[in-house]
Image 1 (cartoon, rainbow, N blue to C red):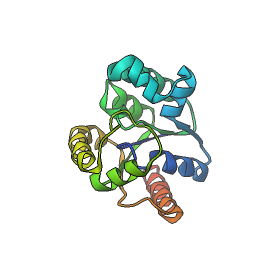
Image 2 (image 1 turned 120 degrees about the horizontal axis):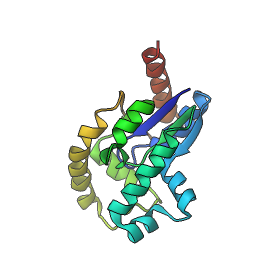
Image 3 (image 1 turned 60 degrees about the vertical axis):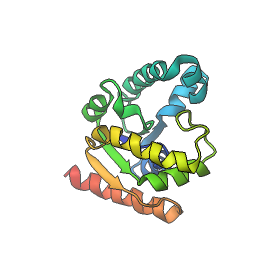
Amino acid sequence: MERIFLIGYMGAGKTTIGKKLSKALALDFIDLDKYIQHTYQKSIHQLFEEKGEEGFRKIEQKALHEVAAFENVVISCGGGTPCYFDNMEVMKKAGTTIYIQVDPEELANRLLASKTIRPLIAGKSREELIPFIDNQLRERERYYNKADLVIKRDKLITKEDVYITVNQIAEQLKTRNK
């Protein structure tokens, strides 16, 4: 039985890496945000608008507790997931946590290029986004750095970058599980 939780800031590549990692390790894949959207039949953006951030975080916590009971799975978590309630402890107790660490400037580039609506950064320009990310990372790193493994990624642009990252994680997991 194996559970791997990918954490890190939005835009770090958790879902992209998670999908490939799950295939490489022959595990199922769950994107926590997609799981929530499927369960509630609403987008994350709609849930934020209707429930506010606090209400959304309670929904997220409940969903995390549910998926933490699944077996043989790679779970891509939302950027804020580890920072609320007992979420980080739940993940660490249930499986292996991996922090995908990316520089704020690179995160801003990825987020601005993304077509996904992200409630926390909606309407921010690049000039506003970099200090916002930097500030949030400073607040969140104390949670992220509790992860069992930290994988630093400066770029995740090509399929080769993803492949290298997945292999790096798989090797570290193999070494860790010996």
